[in-house]
Image 1 (cartoon, rainbow, N blue to C red):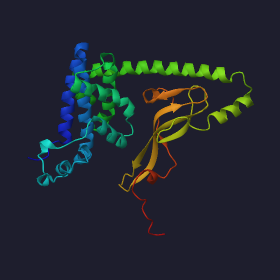
Image 2: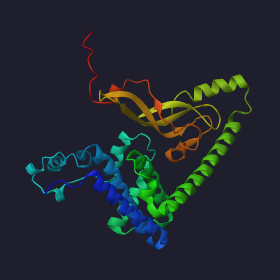
Image 3: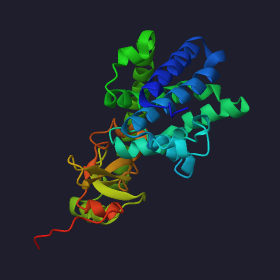
Image 4: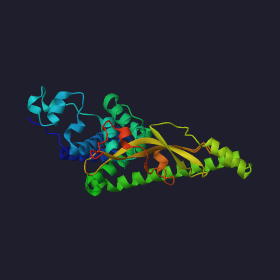
Length: 304
């Protein structure tokens, strides 16, 4: 028996599970537990399809050597059958893909409701019916950029459920835009209350001191103009390394935004709403040496 979990098999499996998920979702709230469970599996398999297309070893548990042997074509030396291979789960597959596909904007925090819903149904027959639609839509928005990367026609993957997919995503986007506008309105009111009474020079001095340092901390922060009040705010996110096309190591380091905060007006935005607020969701090129974020040593210039 040989290793059989390849990218094409995972793509087909993902589509079958998604068909079942969308059918369950369309059947009504009494079937939404099936919908979130099946959608979680479909998402996991598509993420693994992308990883396996690069190399099968990317979907196995790196702590299990026999699984690595199967994934690297050395299954004859493994102590277990391919059916016993240990692979990663949804959360880790998502984490690995995030490092390779920076255009995915569903971060770890945004993924948690989908992973929790799938696991809750699978292990305890528990799920929050009031959150089913939001959870399901996270899955759809995560899958779309992966389909694009895999060059899979969305109409082929979503099939007869493409219209349902579009309606769910459009409704989620509409709700997010409303929430984003509400955040801006509140932040502008806060800014006016705090600073409108000040003279221009006094206000500039206070704002310079107030906004000079970030108030949220992740892997890295970068300054960005606040879309509500125009002051300097701070984008927080994780560093993504873009590799050289020729395979010569890292080329540049980018900040992938997952949050924004402005101390001047208290505007605070999470990853779900960044897309709707100016350019807050755009990756930021960092001046840092990309080798600061990887284990490899920079190449030595032999002419020196």
